Image 1: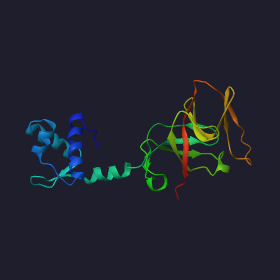
Image 2: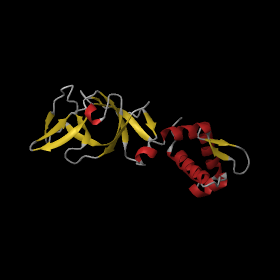
Image 3: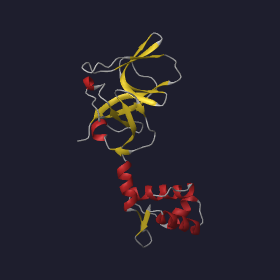
Image 4: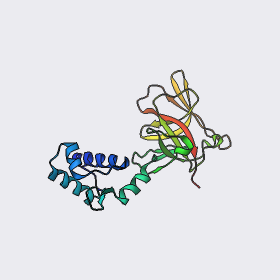
Length: 204
């Protein structure tokens, strides 16, 4: 769907809120609420229809949310998947959103969390397997010994994190594979804690 201009967005937000309250607005009410001439409101509503956000069923209060917009809203009403994270060797953490997964029934609601896909088996002993998804609560500080995601340069990895004198230990959890703890100097500008792992699941 095409992006909206600032004025179009304001009109759409008003119409959507009224429809959610089961009070479809008239074009005159749209104009009055936003301080617009009725002709300007009419033109803005037409743009919203052309861009696929609204449909008009006819009549004085015929504006409705389009099926296309409702489907998009349904798909994005969840936790964003923003790339991949390595549980072995780090992999570039892509900042583009790859999709959304609705997890409110499992992990509750949160506007800030995001999901990363795990690649590798270095955290297998913690039940985090290759191909799993981890739910991340963004924060720059976590408690000693918690499982978190650390950004090394432009790469991210999930490990159990320990804070030691002058260094940070990134500890794997796969005794059979023999992964070794990685040590990073504290204060290194190329190292940043992304957040705490609050959940893990896999898609069947």
